[in-house]
Image (spheres, rainbow, N blue to C red):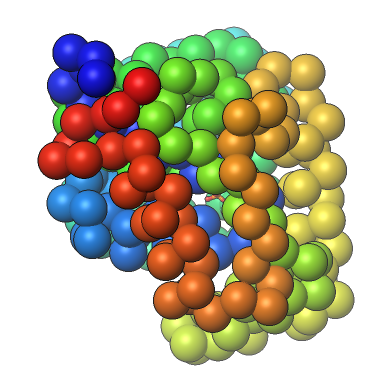
Length: 228
Ligand code: DC
């Protein structure tokens, strides 16, 4: 056992693999804080879009990322004191977040905030680079994947549940483009950490994925403390 006070469960994977749903449920079961790092990139992208900043403007986007006040409360994401929970899920924000996520200065600002949170409290943190870059020493690392067609299907039904109709072909194209950009960028690309457990959720129910991960967590963590 180490004297480390907080435990990090890192969940990485492509868009629509089920990371948010699973990470939220796991955090509830474990009594940990749920951190959606994608929401942080989305909030910065939203700010840039509102200011009319080009998503490729590295200097301006880095400034916005460094100045952004992002609060992640359960079910509510705030940017500079404003509730932006719904707005950051718009398709142009998804695409913008993926574009600004290639900018090293933006990533530096986000990673610093993520590390600060994970150092003060036990977290289930989901994103693209949590197990590889943000917390390479995380107690548990999961790479959650699913086949593209299934990921598109899940995202479509999420959008429909919110009353948004997006043509399937458009969503497929957007998701492919985002996955490609996220996994081929030079800085902290989406990748499976060598010591991460790979889980393909295509044919699994939420309960099955949750139980599989809980088993891994329980083998490494007890009473919020980590076994080494
Ligand atoms: O998980 P999400 O779809 O909300 O993430 C939005 C974008 O943010 C994603 O396309 C890439 C970027 N992102 C990232 O680069 N690193 C993370 N840890 C989380 C998200």
